[in-house]
Every structure is written in structure tokens, then in C-alpha cells.
Amino acid sequence: MKLWKKVSGAIKDRNSIWVSSLTRRTSFRNPDLEAIVIKATSHDDSLVDYKNFQRVYLWLRTSPLHLKPLVWSISMRMEKTRDWIVALKGLMLIHGVFCCKLPNIHNIGRLPFDLSSFSDGHSRPSQSWGYNGFIRAYFAYLDQKSALLSSETRQLHNGQSCKVADDDQNSLMEKLRKLKTWQSMLDMLLQVKPKAENMRTNLIIKEAMICVVTEIFEVYSTICRGIAQALLRIYAAPAKPEASMALEVVHRSASQGDQLSLYFEFCTGYGVLRESECPKIEQIPDEDVRELERIINGACIKKGLLLRENDTESVKTTKDKAIVVRASNYGGGGGGEIVESKRVLTTIITDKWEVFDEDLRVTEEDHDHRKAIVSTTNAAAQNPFAAYSNQTPQVPETKVQLHHLPDLISF
Image 1 (cartoon, rainbow, N blue to C red):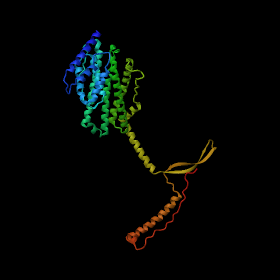
Image 2: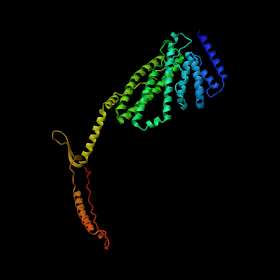
Image 3: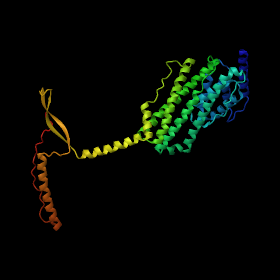
Image 4: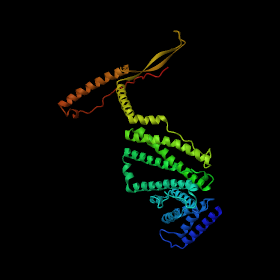
């Protein structure tokens, strides 16, 4: 029976390739590309033809015009088949198309085929229910991812992201909303796993699980980076609405971390991952969670205001104080007995200004100089042209008095 199924599947693939060669080349149809898609999604359950997968991606990278005939070929293949092998290979192929990360891929939108109610038509329901559920869950994730990529591209084209970027708070809220969306995507991705016992030995299921695990790594890394960036911005400028949404994201991330650990355990037992390859899920520290709760309760904001008030008072107090260096004797020992004594300098902060002899002399000279200036000014006020008399201006002789600067740093 198994041999007959394999032979009939090979005949179907060959007939499909022959029919595609008879079609006319248009903007939506390319016979050569259709033949490669049929070979890549063959009925053979013993292998995944990655060689033809790469040929499809090479066509796609060659020209953006090949996207329409590629999507049309995959859609026609998915709509006609009732074999879970062909359907699963088609989903893996379209998943690889998204991983190419070409700009025109974001214009696909929702997938143009529907496998949400897929049911294998070549096996009994008791044998195919696990495969059917796997394909439905895998399709649901890829469909939502395609729609999400298309939505983000439309926002960029409409200029909404540019407008939002002008406001920091709106930008942060938009980032947190995207994080919640990606967390929902991760929940959908964690549902993609084999649940029937007869799926354990299937090679194609294991190959599909490798694609799913790789996608989980990428999505979870995106979420972790987004949470770290959002928390830094919230701590720098605390705001209650952003902190509330961030707290929801953090709690959900902690729950998803536990689910990921269980999922990776399952993959290790299933043979998809080795224990050495299984990543360690690190939870967000409790202190960060408590800080968000304090921001929501307003404690952090009040604390910041109190710190600013204390800083202002300390600045005012410092303005009225001076720093004085004075010598003192330092002795060490106990019981009143001095073991060692040395003269050291100590710094004292006081609110009384210390006046030195040099300052007194300079002050007296300044006072005499000011008196002379005042008398000259009064005379100039009575006769404004007195300064410009016929007398020859003379430069007054000034004696330069050198003051000896004391050495304040001495030991």
C-alpha cells in the first residue's frame, strides 16, 4: 500500500510538470518556475528537496517580477492538493520566501490560499489528525506574519511612522504595541508542534520543526531586544501609561519564558534539538518589575522630585560656605599615649569666610584707588571737558609691589 502511494504520487508530480509546460508565459505564470515549485513540493515523504528550494529563492532574488508567478504557482499547488506532504512542503517553501527578507515580499499581504481547515484525503482521520493540526497551526502563523509585514510596510508608505517618531511618548507606545503583537505571534508559533505518536519517526515533520524552532529564536530575540530598549526609555523618562503597558509586556514575557523552556524540552526529546543547542531562557529581574510598579504607583516620580528639591537646597547651602585648609596634629594610639604625631592638612567646610593679611592689604589699596576714581568722576561731572584740557597726558608711575605667596601645601 505504501509503495503504491509513492508511485501514484510520483505520477501526479510528473503529470503536473507536463501540464505546466503547456501553459503560456504571462506576468502571472512562468512554466519554468512552476516546474521547480512542483519538484520542491513533491509527494515524496522520504526527503525535502532543498536543491529546488534554493532554485526557487534564486529566481526570486534575480528579479522582483518573479514574485507574482511564484505566489501564483504555490497558491494553485496548495489549493489543489489534499495530501499533507505537499501542503507541508508548500508551507515550508513560503516560509523560506519570507526569510529572504526582500522588500517586495512585504506586499503579499494575507496568503492567497487557505489551509485553516485542511484535511488529508488519503489517510483515515485516526491516522491523519496530528498532521492536519500541525498544518493548520503552521498556516495560521505564516498567514498572520504575512499580514503583519504588509501592515508595517503600509504604515511606512503612508508616513505614519515618520509622524509618530516626532513624539517620544507616542513612539514608545507604538513600540510597546508592536511588542504585544509579536508576543501574540510567539503564542501562535508555540502551537506548531507534533501531537500524534505516529509523527515521531517522520522525516518531513522534523525538518519542518527545525524551521519552526529557528523562527522561534528570531521572534523571541526581537521581543527581548524590544523590551530592553523600552525599559531603558521608561526609566529615563518615567510615565504611567507607558509603564502600565510595559508591565503587561513583562508579565507576559515571563509566562512565555516558561512555555519556551517546556517547548525546547519537548524538541530535545523529539530529536529536533540537542541539549547543548537548547538555549537558556533568562527571566527579567524582579527589581525591574518592582521599579515599573513603583512608576505606576507614582513613587518613582515623587522620589525624583524630592531628589531635585534636595539638590537645589544643597546648592543654595554650598553657596554660603567656604573651604578652608588648616593644619592639625594627627596622633595615633590608645589610652592617651601618642605613638606617632605628624602635622597634616585637613579640609573644613564652614559658613565663615577666612580673611588673610594679603587680602587686607589689597582691600586697603582698592579703597584708596576707588576714592581717587570717585573724586575724578565728580570733577568730570562738573566740567565734562576737563579731561581733555591742553595739558599733556602723563602716565602715572606705579610701584609694583611683589608679594610673597605662602606655600600652602607643606608637610
